[in-house]
Amino acid sequence: MCFHIVSTSLLILAIFSSSQAQDNAPPPVRTFLDLEAYASQLAQKPHVPPQGKLDPFFEALDYDGHRKIQSKPGNALYKGSGGGFEVEFFHPGWMFKKTVVFNSIEDGRAAALPFDQGRFVYGELKVPENVVAPLGYSGFRVIAMELEKNRRMEFLSCVGASYFRAAPQHHGWGLSARAVAINTTGGAPEEFPDFTHVWFIKPKAGEKSFKFYALLNGPSVTGAYEIETTPGETTLITVNGSVFLRRVVNQLGIAPFSSMFWFGENTHPRALDFRPEVHDSDGLLIEQNFGPVIWRPLDNSMELRQSVFNIESLKGFGLQQRDRNFGHYEDLEAKYHKRSAVWVEPIEGFGRGALHLIEIPTGEETWDNVVLMWQPDHLPTATEPLRFAYKLNWQGEHEHNLAKVTSTRYGEAIATPTNPDDYLFVVDFTKGKVPDDAAADWTPTIELTIPPDAKLLDKRVIANAESGGWRAFFKMDVPPGLKLLEMTCELSDGKQLMSERWSYQWKR
Image 1: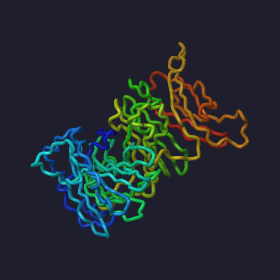
Image 2: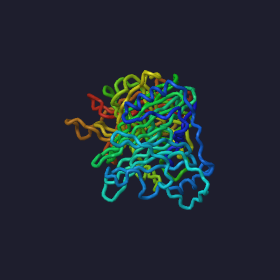
Image 3: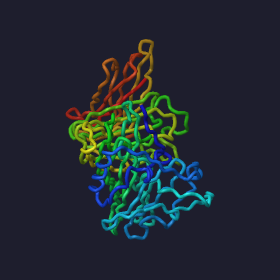
Image 4: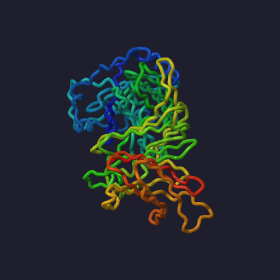
């Protein structure tokens, strides 16, 4: 297996392809249909790997050297145009060596945006006089100028392969999205196709959204994407895509994400670190049109975990950062308690398929080790695309009406000579809706499923006076040979379920 692991302190370690390295220059692109038609033509040709290289000076830049290159104040694209949005570009170098072809569409006509050294200041970096300028930029970020008085809000960042991420108004950067995932699991080498060409739609005065088209190109896949972003307390991204396959792949994932989970309240053993928890996301939330709402806590262990959820009718899903208590992280720099969550609303192309959650072992916070994607049953071809559309809500947390899981803890129960393998699990829920005729001392019923080889010793629910919700306990005897437990736990009011379904995978 081959997995892509992405930096959380930068944005992405994979990078865009150079324009000169592509098969052919695209014809004039004015609409999404123009781009879709070209992606289909491209899929019927062999892929040509990128050939362009950076000048050795930029190629050899280290982290400290590259970070000295900053956007030049007052020289952003669309500054002063009255549209309320500005675009700043990322300079190639260090880990960001490949470049993208950028264009701007205005009044239905596209104009190229070649590399302009004047968009950057190089600070203390001593650039040789004979240095060869890059062929283009390595990525871009978008800034809203009038969202809040006297505040520039950077809300969208795109750099690296087909990765992008957004930030809501009152939360920081967190997990990353990408256009497509190819062979993340299944034995074949994983691929990271690139957004090789981008067309910005020049924003007009009064517009609330920023839109661009992007061409996806890789060894096995091509694609056309229309991405429209509206910043706010929830920053909304609407993705409309068409994907074509040059060749059959083992796995195709759409609406994929990368996040980081190093350790949390449920991780044993924990890292020797001053912080109680370190993660960008702490759980996967799944809503079905028919069926339970599922909460899957994330974890990090010594072995890779892969969970597959076959969903008949998908309403939405997303990686969440539900724990917002600063005292649970104690990190003044990373501010994990403010990391954004994402909620996916499918629109088209999410019929028969399955959600795949992959948790890769990690011993640090630098690398993304959690992958989430939707794998459709039906794959496209070079002439018949997979068309899909979905909304990404970058926000604090997705809300629903059921009692929510707020924490997952477990540990060894008090052992006795006859019960040396007893484990106690503790799951906290919010209050949820209590029956109108409930007595003052009423408590919900715990609904529990465990493997048949494990022996249930006790289960109960009590009111949690500290949180105002409920605490579910259950104790099991786990035979030494049982290395994996798949369990569910939910609360009932006696007539119907009143909580999310806690769905947990425990490994010895």
